[in-house]
Image (cartoon, rainbow over the protein chains, first blue to last red):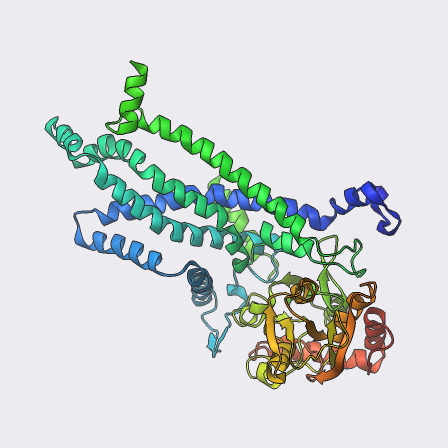
Length: 293
Length: 240
């Protein structure tokens, strides 16, 4: 990065360290923090949406919708994450490629499945073999978001379902007495009131999601834990910056990062909790009223 | 606007289909000097240089991808890349699921490296990388096998005392031993294992395999492969 770093063999002390910490590989490491944060920022709302949909379906009055909602939560929650990550992603990826294969290569005669091998025509590859590496990374990232959202959505769905059931019946009945129809009761009374009941469960999920990001490497996305292990491992002089086993320091760095994330999350969640309790018929809402009076 | 972005994305995904064929080369990136990720963050090492040379000879465009060793064959089969070039020894068991080229490194020896040269490698805990021929050998030798996902961890395990010796390709261990300031020593006797190192392909991809195979034949004939081997592994190793 710096011109003074051109010959690492002649560097010593702090300059060596500075040059070492700014190698291309370390820059990749720093970017992976951004990857993880982006994944969290994208996945959390998508998972919440999946969860909301699942919860709505689970309490729907139509049987087919109810079955879909319940099956989704039960199935995804029952399968171990790692199995889901290995199986579902491959199935999704191959499903997409098979679809393009049927559309783009109707004349292809060789079998797509050949024992354990899966081979579609070159035009059906997603992304194409010839596309730049960035597209492969983005595709892997998108698969990761979908998978994370599906898994965490199922848990969120159960949390939201419980929260919706927890809203006092008296509140809904009053709304009905005012002449609101089903949808209006749902939108105006049920949903605004349920968040306070959902928050503890959702905050648990958020914390678990933060720590689940190392699963990303299973999907071919290089996350912070992968880089910490790769960079920290002992390096011989085949590398420009040889050093002994430094994994401890890298993992200490990650520890600080995760603790900081946890602290920030707790601060934000406490604020949300206070805000949501405002004017609610719950113990914390009552405490707020008393404090204000 | 949205449509424009979408169209651009699709164009980017589909463009270039008519250009030179692109081959994705899968490697581990954690096995110096065979293959490793250098400080610039790129795949480097003997196999990088060899692979690029072979691609150039066959007029193919090559893209390098890294993956962990555990999933290197399944990822080939499901089409995430087209070639495995990752210090993979040719064995009969692997030959049942993938097709190999001829070897590009002659059959080599594996060795035990330990803190104490006198350990009995047939009875102490020995570390090896999961899914390698070395791991299989240790298991059969009667020693307790301690498996790790990456080569680096197998060596770290000996330093930490989790295992008393590590068993791996001698060419991988040699630079580590040389730079350990006498911490490590060879233990036991060297063991010839495998039929040399080759590139692996899907069984349905024989046309591509033949292209690379032809390239290796040429490089063996004109001596350039030997030069590469000496450049990366030193002049004490076996050549063609």
